[in-house]
Each structure stands twice: as C-alpha cells, then as structure tokens.
Image (cartoon, rainbow, N blue to C red; front, side):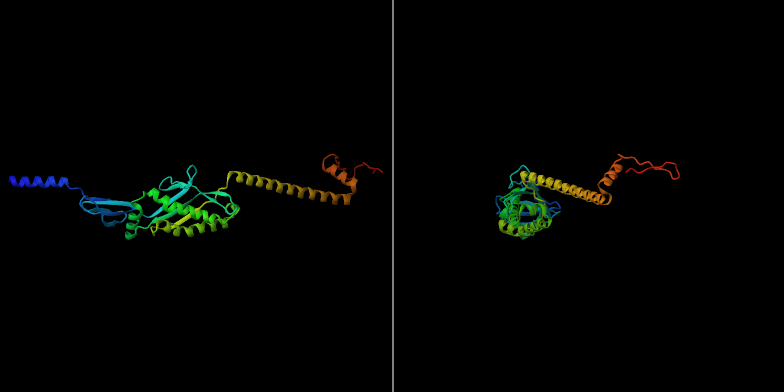
Length: 280
C-alpha cells in the first residue's frame, strides 16, 4: 500500500515538473505556425494552424500567429514623416513630385493579403517574421514599394492633370496598382503578399499653388460676369438704336420719359367735349 502511495506521489511530482502542452488558438483572421522548442530539442518546423482553430501541440513547442485574410492599410497621416508607419493599419500621407516639379501629397488606401499557404508562410516566418515585427514588415516590404510606385507614376504627369483630370488620375492610380505586386515581391524576395488593391484620392497641391489657383478661379468668374454684363449693355444699345430709327431722337426721349414715369398720360374718354390742339 505504501509503495502505491509513493508511486502516485512520484507521478504527481513529475507531472508538475513537465511543461503544459502548447495551445495555438487562432481567430478567424489569423493563421498560426508551430515549431518544436526546448533545451533538449532542435528548433524544427512542425505544422501550420488554420484560422478559427484551437491547436494542441506536444510538449516543448512554440507557436506564432500572423494576419490572415484581407488587410487594409491607410496612408493619410499629416504629422509624420512619409516613411513612418503609425500603426499596423495607418501611415503618413505619401509625397510625390510631378513631371513639372510640383510636390503633391497623396492620401489613399492599400489592401493586401499575407500568403498563408503553409509552405509560403513557413518561408515568410523564417526569412522575415523572425526578424521584424508586423509594423516593421509593413514599413519595409509594403509601404516603401508603394511609395516608390507612387513616385514613379507621378513623374509621368503634370500637377494639373492629376489635380483636375479624373481620367488621368484613374490612369495614374491603375499604373501604381499594376506595378505594386512586382515591387513588393522584389523587396521581400518572395511571393509573401498578394491580392493587392490601391485607391488613391485626388492629390493635394502645395498651399501657395492652391491660393494661386483659387485666385485664378475668382478672376475667371469675375471676367465671365463682366462679359455677361457687356453682352447685356450691347443688347440694350442695339434696342435703343432701333427705337431711335423708328421714333427719331425726340420721339425716343419722349418714349423713355413716359417709360420712366416722368410724363404722365391721361386718357380722354370718347365723346368728351375736351379738344386737344397739337402744338406746332
């Protein structure tokens, strides 16, 4: 009996010294990857974990989780340097110089997916994930290629084309989207990201150019208003000339005086005894 109690105690003591198994609990928008780990084990790849999964690995394992599914990355911050990533979802607005040497500010949004195919995810983890956190990964392998794509595309257009021509702006945005996958692949040295989308807003021009543009618009509106007034005056002059030709100068003056209420016309009833003698 004493031997059994001693054996049970020994087993319990041993259980307390053993590490708990590794649990990798992934959310619907996460994928996992598991490696063996421990003082007496080499670090070797074991398995991948799908989204929405609770995976129980053996003793001496370590797991890592990465984003799965579409990710949105917005670049519109005003107070940061262009290359600064504010968070895992946001960065500063981009700066790009046009063909006519005007620096424009570019706001927009990029969408993408991390390639979570197991073999690719393992390669990504070992080549990039172990060396960088997610924010640095975005800055180095996504934001910088995007910034380069925007700058190279912007050099092909004048500021007025990108600011005022919606067709040119759509063409510019498509150029950025088309070149982005190759740039990201070259930066990361692998097909770790895919399914890219890019939406670029109307770029902003420098404040002094904006003021000059607004002043030009005001001037154009004033000029158009003056042209309309000139047309109205010319029409009135032509009407006056036509009346003078019909009524003569004195007749026109009398007509205008009657029109302005300076001469009052009193109607004479038919059959009245009033006789009016026209003046000579």
